[in-house]
Length: 205
Image 1 (spheres, helix red, strand yellow):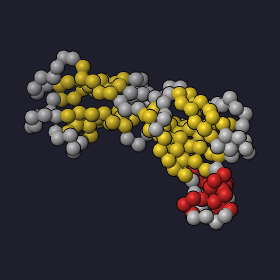
Image 2: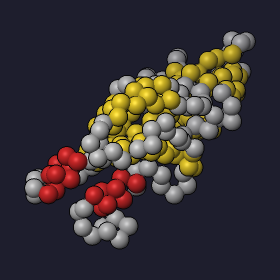
Image 3: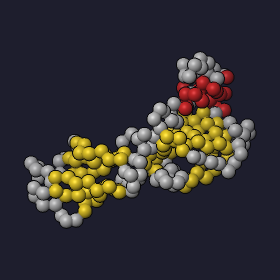
């Protein structure tokens, strides 16, 4: 049961889809559409990911729309959850339960500006994750027993984790940073006890 709904009509799946849009703690953002029958909504997740929900209210026409993101640089891989006429028809004809439920697929075409075709009478939810951050060692070069400074380059409001490893297999978290701007400098001691140390910055949901 989702939000008090006990049937399997479209309203049930719309409510189910909303659980992936903006759970408690997320921030609702401004979103707009140039099409009167194509409504857009956006939310910034606490992890730094972006949710974009698009409703096509037209009963017969699919819209090939351009999505333009402002202030967010996504990875090219995104997750799409959708519900529409095919699922509703599967429910009406008592097709297998999997074909009645919300469809989940990967989308490899995300960017700051991309196009997507929204089917008639459909809900489409994009989960866009931040592009990979960069980690740059700032001069001077680190000395044994001293310290060195990383510059973490990413996006404001996104939580990034700095990790290190001695074998590129087992990684340990050194620090977690939420950027206020596009960069932050992080000072670390030069590790001892191993011939080599490797460092990386990652985003994790």
